[in-house]
Image (cartoon, rainbow, N blue to C red; front, side, top):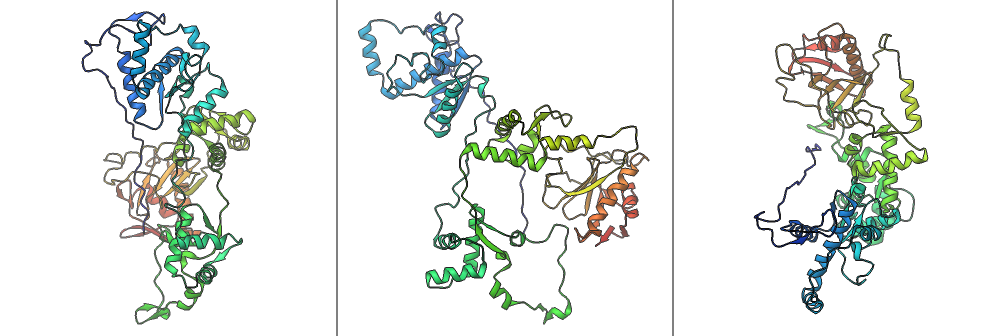
Length: 523
């Protein structure tokens, strides 16, 4: 079984819409929403058509944010959207009769001072005098609205009580819409899952067979092992049940590592061509995918504030310093916009620091105080000789910033060919791949399986690059000699045969043995 992670990326639905077919036929004079004096009529204004189109878009979706370039325009647009929505909801008969009785044209909008005096009200500037029962479609959100009122507006949008918010740059980072995940178990737990939850609710941890016996005694009939295993893993993926070991997870997802070959049983364990099983032990202990003790997880706190707080703390603990790339790599709800808000609050309370820790990544970087002090301890005098400290990591390890917080560096050109010619491989965050870092710089990428390498040493053919190559080779060999990887059989490097290259020579010096197919090292 192989877990495939397809490439993902943001998809933007960006359109430029003109709400009229012919700009030369815009109709009679109207009061412009963006007029300079607030009351002067403009002939042939496009604003009524824009406002109608915005209402159509808002009503077609659950929640919408409309951005304007000024507070005054936000208030006026909010009032107009609510007026149009009221006309559509209540019908035009009452409005027409009221207009005929008054015998006057539509009154011009109020002056800017009155607009800003009612800033943030439900229906724009006229909310103070209009009927409180009138339908509301939008509310204004900008710097002149109090902080408490802005929080109420955001809560209304998130809960669905409000369909639209007209905002200035006050919402440039977006809104945390809360947990958007589906229910823990779709359509509710079935009978076996309910039995598992009831048994585990008594407390403590249960081995698989203890759990099976408990369910059998409760229902009066034995429970099939495969049915119980399926129920357990459904509850695991729903976030309701956990285990005290990672062994069943490794077995369930395929077992072993990408660089480990399955061992063949010895002849003493063979019987007529088949490996002798241990059916009695398996029957009593349960299948390997259900090993260990199972227990209930505590109930999740669904409050969006608490979850955002916990996610920000997790990012700081996992990555040390948090950037936009690391937050986006985690795929947390709200993305970096939500993390930025929470981490800015951490900065105000002294729990995190903001600074320019990594070049080219901007100033929106956060780290805890101990992390910053730790980074400073690695500062060195550049006039001294580099120590070339190397470390080999799993590619998906949070300690590897490349492909998440940092972009992948370019692969140096090989002699007589283009960059990475002939490989068809590109570095990526893939399960089973390995990387080697030398003094924080990416020097080697090992594809899943270990047959293909990508070297990022810029001067591997020069003497300047050989110390880095030597440190890289030693770190890669240490994975095998330290029995973290059973075997590495390398065939190609940067699209060419590995033997006869500076990288191949460095690997040979580190202990790899040449073979007709390349280089090999066994643990």
